[in-house]
Length: 436
Image (tube, rainbow, N blue to C red):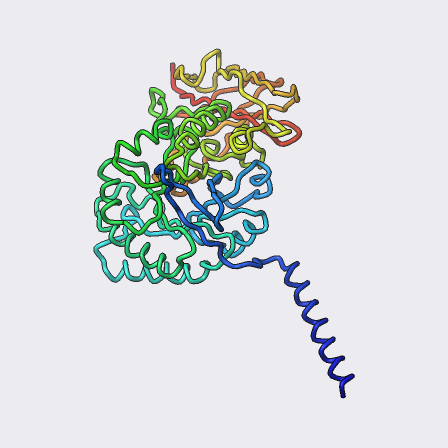
């Protein structure tokens, strides 16, 4: 009898060991939520504490290529909604990244009525389900309630709805932070949110060209609580110089790289009292005005030199593999700022000159696109213009001889400098085809 008991106990212990081993190699989350707070020290400086340790957000907006993101020195990602969130959260956790999980709230500019109490209640109920689903995930850092619900809005009752949801989220999940994401900041917006949305732990601000002076601007608005720069990147297409035919002139990837470095150091890490970190945009690729304006990768997957800049921002060192840089780019000796006019069917020459910090060779690619006419607001989906083929007459490295399109109108010539290591630089020149 005693022998039987010993065998049973031993078998039970063995099974416990097997189950423990299996749980250790499970691909999913293996721990619960990490308590996260925002605290202010005796000097008035705000800090995030995650699991009792100081945590400064070095993040990117996007959900792909997380291995490269970690290699570049980041520690967090931001989403705009909960689409595919189970996979994204698990992947982030595997890579040691936290997630500011976006909870999409409807926009007035898309037809949502914040005076409609039933619609507002349904939205709140939907948020409740999402919070209950993800509140215990170990990768969760913060809830991002909405994205730019203030963009082109008129009904300030949206802030009552945001506060009602924020208060509910805090009750359902006391372990994580709650924020709402706004399109820039001004005095009226800061006042409304201060008065009507007290339950958020910090404010999240999307800004582009305005990042240069954001710390001063935040103080001027009267916002004296902590904030995160939830979306930032190149100078926005609404903030740059425009051609005579009224299309925006895009910075080259080299100019963007410089902008990403200078603005990060002068604004984000310089504000040591109120800024809790940032999420750069976009760790991916999208069509928005052009296919290259905001993405840190090309459509074909190459890594732009802006990724190099973020690696430097996050680690203080350049990556081992580097992208080329644009030195100059012209059509008939004219830059993008010269209002380039061409004749239908005429023959012209474009020249791009580049360089590489390690003298690595690169290939030059060219692409002609009609100017995009599907221009939306707030990052809404845009259709990409189709590539125009048959215009290249001759190309030799950085020299291109081409024929202008026969149809009058606005176009762009794109150039891509790509290494064998899939690092790239890019630039484009808008031009207009018209009769002499």
